[in-house]
Length: 143
Image 1 (cartoon, rainbow, N blue to C red):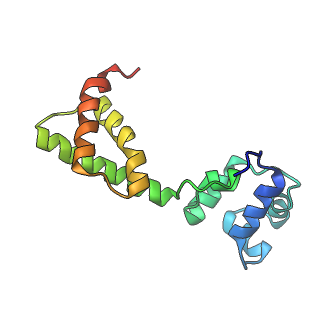
Image 2 (cartoon, one colour):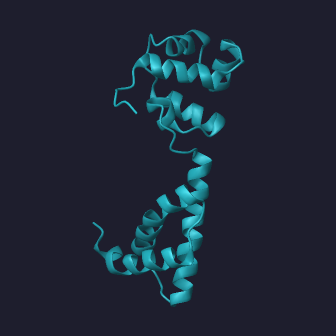
């Protein structure tokens, strides 16, 4: 893998991929922008604003990191699924251990468990128990 910076042309190409077979006019309308404005993004004459990324996310649950970098880190839906899996695993671990977590501890535990859930689709009980233990040690030390 080469380590190179993403160019505006790279981003424009990914926008073309997202548009697929739809017309420029229809795709721009889906995003709530003028066709001429969208064409400027897809031809790399203008950098895409955050508002366009938000419109793309709302339209199709795409990963904004992919649009900007070409690296796939998952979709918003996958992130939500991972967060739900982390939440459930930590809650079950706390119930098994008969531990009441403060909001800070719970946030720490979910954050720590999220990447495993995103990568594997779930978190096994042993992993959740370890994360819970770390949360009870470190969760109250958060700034």
